[in-house]
Amino acid sequence: MSKLAIHGGTPVRTKPFPRWPVFSEADARAVARVVLSGVWGRTTGKVVAQFEQAFAKFQGARHGVAVVNGTTGLRLALMAAGIGEGDEVLVPPYTFLATATAVVEANAVPVFVDIDPATCNINPALIEAAITPRTRAIIPVHFGGLACDMDRILAIAAKYRLKVIEDACHGWGGKWKSKGLGCIGDLGVFSFQSSKNLTAGEGGFIASNDENLFETVQSLHNCGRLRPKAAAGGGGTGVPASAWYLHHLLGGNHRMTEMQGALLLSQLKRLRKQTQRRDANGRYLDRELARVPGIKAMRRDPFATVVSHHLYLFRYDPAAFGGKPREKFIAAMKAEGVSLSPGYPVPLYKQPVFLNKNFGPYTGWKHTRPNLDYGKVSCPACEKACAGEVVWLSHPTLLGGRRDMDDIVEAVAKVQQHAAEI
Image: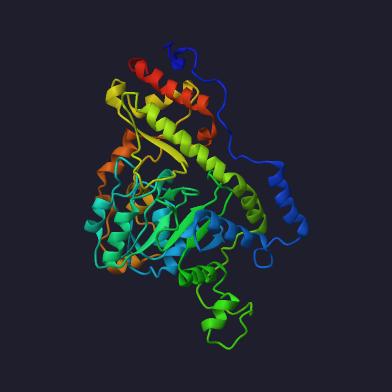
């Protein structure tokens, strides 16, 4: 192959990959209709409710509640599940900060369980060893949109009577067997932040098949009010169910706006085809990159029937690249026209907020774990992933065609063949 672009050679690729977000005049018209209606709030509008029904059906849940963002969704799901002061919740350390800080905001204690290096998902083989009498829940993260091993996780949860709250913030359209991610455990949470595969700039969603949990989440996201049906069934106050100033739970205003609901409804129309393309391109990259020494795709177990690929991940072995660190490889790939990311720099337990326990008013840990020290936590697989093993490719890239995927493979192969020069 020709000289590396980083040293003045011709890059494999000069045209850009698909941009994100994808939008159209139809999206703009959908939002404009809401603006011109003058009905912008969820409590008087109908659009968010329509989106809730549509997305719940798309993903395969009986119920869904749209909220302001995924972080809030995780916190409300924990509250609805009864997680509170001093309880322990098992979480992976290779995920966005919110998975663990939501546990802190529930006044509970995050306990980190290492990942399987072949998937970057929580390792089921390590879960039971982390369970104590204070453990109340597990948050499996379907990282990048790759399904966790829910058979093993659900079995452990049943054995110890733990709640399962899926972090499906990368999971829109993804499936475990025939079930949509986020619809397998007790509750599932999604994000619609600007980088996400389904986006309105911000926003979140809580899915559940449990009627009681759904009603609790509904109340928590709407200032502790009860819906008319729920209030009539057990409010016990004698006050009409429609009373605006009757609050049953310690909720807040976490409602989505009608404009966001309209944009998401419009975006949802293209999500199925986008997911199919990302999934197909992911399978193609898995197969083709396997031919390149030093590159190993994430393991895709048979139960991962659809992978939404918010991220396409692979493992980088510097030994096959002349001992060059991941950063050198990424820089060489960028010069060839393919942008990659090293992902998280450190596991969550090495973040300053956890090392210093800067948890503000959330002091539940002081009563049950006064000697809590995240500096003593060690998750070797996660640390290796952060230190130089795992590489990310962003989801808009996977909206390209076969020629685009071939460019990625060609660039990786070129850099590998010239590894001594990077």
